[in-house]
Structure formats: structure tokens, C-alpha cells
Length: 220
Image (tube, rainbow, N blue to C red; front, side, top):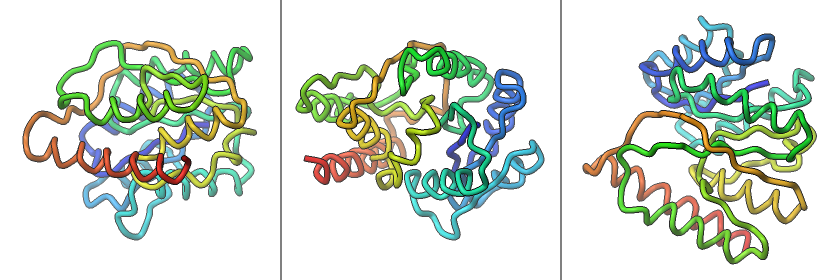
């Protein structure tokens, strides 16, 4: 089963969903649509995804929580669950490697780290996330904010609800670590929509920093 997070991703979502169908044949795909104002939901339906949309813009964590709970309630959850972002495009093909890691029993959670980073800011947000993890004994992460994760279905329920907004991944890592789950990272040739060093990019990263700071403060 795959849970795909998306808000206004009509440009890259078709390629993402097509790649997931190719790499995870037979897996049921759920699209967590965070009240998109474009054709994101319609695209998900055309590609055979189970679309779960929030009524208002609620943030990534809330949208993914809603979709995850709907999937669990439907009884459709498979042994391994993949969480990913809708803007990966064709590079989503590589996420099957994370699923394989969990299926082989090498970890309860496998996280995909981007092999090559393009764009971005000055590293303040990811630096804060790494510092927050370093304060938890034994917890380390190269990609603490990566939304590309495979995990055992049995672990999914214990990690719900996800933290609000962009605090979801950091909170998930902290909660899983404290629960004694094994977490591994794998570098993959992934690509996604870039947020540059412009006003929109810095606003986005400011929201990220706010959300992860809140998630960390609630788990101190």
C-alpha cells in the first residue's frame, strides 16, 4: 500500500502515480489530497488511486493522518506501507527499494535520502531537525525531513496521528526511535519540485521550521 501526500501537484503527480504502479504492481495507492485547488484529486482518481481529500487546507500531517486512518479502516493495509510525496515524478520508481528493505526484515522503517539535492535554502531547517534528533540518545539521521518512507503496516497505527504540517517526519522519527523501532536510511536518485531562494521558497522553509519546532517541543 502506498500513501501519497499532495497539494496542488497536478504537474508532477501523474508521473509519480505511474511510477508507483510500475514499481509496486498490485499495491493499492491512496492519495492524501490537502484541499488542492487544481486537478490533483481528479488526476488521482483517473490513475486509480483512492482519493481522500481534506475539506480545507489542513497541512501535510493532517491530510496524511486522514488518509492513513481511512486505509486502515478499510482493511486494505498490506504488510508494508510506503509513504511518499506526490512531486517525485518518475523517480518514484526507486521507492520500491525502501519497501524491499522492510520486507527483508532489515528495519521497521526505511527512509529515502536524496542522493542529489538541487535548490534549497541555507540548511537551517534540516540543521535544526538533525540537532533535535541528536538530543535523543542514539538517534541520528542524514535525511530527517524526508517524506519517502516504508514501514511495517503494524507500526503505522502506533505512529498516528502524525504531527501537524511539516513536523510529520521529524515527529515520526522521534516516536519510532523511542518505541525501539529500527530505522535505516538509503540514498536514492530521487527528484522533486524545487523550492528556490526566492520569497516563496523562504516562506515554505519558514513554515517547515515552525512546524518541526512545534513537533519537537511537544516531544521533549
